[in-house]
Length: 445
Ligand SMILES: Cc1cc2nc3c(=O)[nH]c(=O)nc-3n(C[C@H](O)[C@H](O)[C@H](O)COP(=O)(O)OP(=O)(O)OC[C@H]3O[C@@H](n4cnc5c(N)ncnc54)[C@H](O)[C@@H]3O)c2cc1C
Image (cartoon, rainbow, N blue to C red; front, top):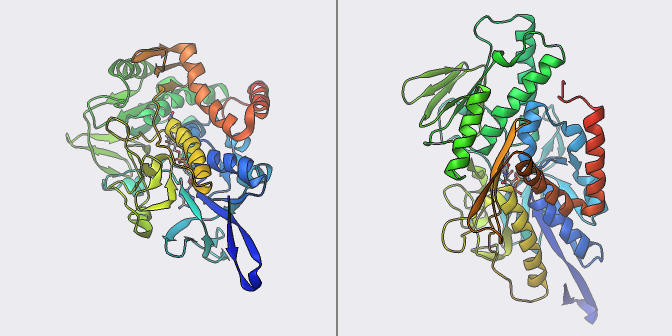
């Protein structure tokens, strides 16, 4: 696992492999942890994780942060502390470019909140590089989206939505707007849009309990807008129909076959000529990888700027560069592409780990085969739906209610186990249970 190079005087220098992972999300952090535990601990390689933020929060929880049902101050994980415990190092920085000839990557300068430079732009060298920097929402070039919509791509944006939501309810609570209420529009009827719609109704109930006098169920108007013919287009039809029905019962106005053509400060314009009034607009329609990734370092990318990878997860043009998670375009066996999901990132991280070990010990790398275990959607405390797939079932099986909730939570627990092991995850669950008794049900600040 080491490179042995001759040098002056015939003395041999043993160089440890430098493995750099960019992006400490669902896939990248699991990979860094595994590599740290396996290679970093025995000093067989140096593992460096680079992320543009200080803390990790599993992305599928962001809509709960936005609605206030999850307190990220409690749940977010410090990269530096985690790196220390798992024998890798962490560098705070934002990737801007890759130089494949020199095997370096470029990180942007770091500035403080006033724009004053703290750390100049810098380079890191690598022997093996893994790109795991996820994806962001795709505005499809729709006018007004960047200026007037809130995205839910990171913790900062989720917190921003949360504080805007609290401000709206505060205003309405003190000076109620007769017949108008609080209008929130969500563009994108995928899992995030559906789950956020339901979370908002949970939030309004808690706000009422905590003394926001005029905040009750009837005051919140949520419009969920989907361009396709049904919400949850990637899930089986019956789940999408059941979710549509549940959301309508909650009071969500679900608009399908509705293309948003523009956004203003006061709402959405649709292709049919309708204007949807909104005090707060969330854009969660589709994904893409940030534009700087287009053709980065001469690597092959697709129209969503995802890196094209071979079944081994190595980039098509460079065997020393891997990509995992949302930023990788990986073909599935039998056609189609691996979907941008947390379970894909989790599986790819485990597979990339094995392939990196094979690469540095000169063994043959194995192809990654995506295993679809189904998909679950949580409508907050109201219900959970989904389909499960596995060896015991032929095709998919629809699950609902408590059983579905257990499987929904299981995906997050698997992520935690990959990061912390079984013992620490059990303790985290215990503390979580105690916190549910001790802490407010809604974050109010
Ligand atoms: C609100 C929401 C809800 C979701 N719900 C579900 C769900 O229920 N089930 C499901 O399967 N999937 C869900 N997803 C999708 C899932 O979160 C992603 O598929 C998964 O997180 C992808 O993992 P990743 O490791 O590729 O990227 P991410 O988890 O997004 O991590 C990327 C990391 O890269 C860092 N980064 C980004 N750019 C740079 C840069 N230039 N330099 C350095 N670091 C960088 C980021 O800070 C981040 O830490 C949801 C997504 C969202 C936004």
